[in-house]
Image 1 (cartoon, rainbow, N blue to C red):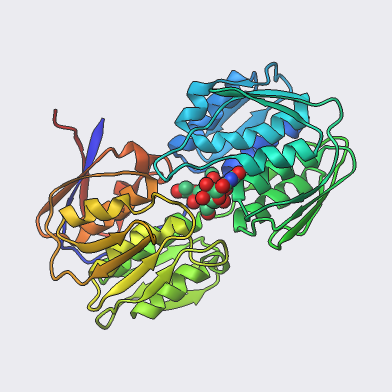
Image 2: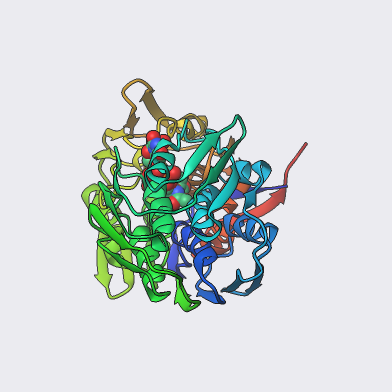
Amino acid sequence: MSEIMIQGGRRLEGELHIAGSKNAILPIIAATLLCRDTVYLYNCPKISDVVLMIQILRQLGCRVIWDDKVLMIDTSTLNSSDVPAHLVSQMRSSIILLGAIIGRCKEARIGMPGGCQLGKRPIDMHLDGLRKMQVEITEYEDFIQCMTLNLQGAQIHLNMPSVGATENIMLAAACAQGTTTIHNAAKEAEIVDLQDFLNACGANITGAGTKKIIIHGVSELKGITYRIIPDRIVAGTYLVAGAITRGNIILNDVYNRHMQATINKLRAIGCHINEEQNKVILSVAKPLKGIGLKTEVYPGFATDMQSQFLALLTTCNSISHVKENIFDARFKTAKELCKLGAHIIVDERKQIATVHPTPHLIGTSVEAMDLRGGAALVLAGLVAKGCTNVKNIYHIQRGYEDIVRDLSKLGANIWYTEERK
Ligand code: EPU
């Protein structure tokens, strides 16, 4: 198990290419279970969550070949509808396999995803939606058993626009009988990518990207070749790396329209951002100032960018207030940033962090508490005096191909080292 070491103090400069999106490819891999012939996914990010998803598909009997950035999935050999608890517990988002497995096999048994680093994370909306579609669900302590004789389209109203519930219902409905309408659906870019993938395979879905998604069930889906959208959160993280070091960086192969909330907030604190087609150029020419920030569902400011901004806002020259509205335990990274000398006060009840300007962060040993929080600590290390070592980097590897490679390319003094016992 290795750690990341960063010797802070270098301004980042240069260009990066942004890989495919984790949160787009995971549901699309689930969707391949509905396809009768081989699917080829291009721009597949080399991250551990994809490795785990592939492991689950192989466990179900599918054939998967991963050749550089192309993932070939053949689900014609599928022979199980059982996703073991130990695999689900390693990656909560594997719950999105449920809708696809039911769509394909009319039955499923899947480990119960518990809470995680981000909080309790119930799946009530996923299960309520599937129940409306005539799926019989029995919940046991550590697994869920599902069965349906006739998967039937339904009118489904989500209490809140959950990304995972929207995806699970889309997957179950794609090959169900009749029409399913999801009201108050999530509008994330990754939902649109899932719709685009499914439609290219022969599904009949409209409305992704709006509050109402309509899915007319079709009898089966075919295999296709498809390119995954770029990862807007990885891109946002690297823009913050540029901003926190007062650097000058260019991101290529991004979809600017997916990143507007992040770009707007970077502009609000004083960064200069130029947008060209599939390219974002960031530079910093003046002192950065604190702002108010609240996380919201897409297209609002993403909860997945909150920790990185906490790190950045400590380096601004006035107070910031950050309100977390999506997850109930996403401020754990604040405590780690404080070990580096940040002055952040979290009101747990109100889920608000007050970030005071910090003249200098000082390198020390910190622990990644979750994926984005881990990335935020690496960003803080880029400007901390001396050496910062970030532990538990398996969290970071879930969603970043190689943060050390990418930041080194921009000039950071950063490397892997073996963990000391
Ligand atoms: N929720 C419920 N009941 C449900 C489903 C969700 O109460 O049945 C609650 C959750 O507990 C949470 C809120 O609704 O408080 C939002 O959850 P949502 O279902 O939208 O999130 P998710 O599908 O579990 C995805 C991303 C997350 C991202 C969130 C919000 C994937 C694989 N994961 O999670 O990504 O933060 O949407 O945008 O798409 C990350 O990449 O670091 C990450 C955590």
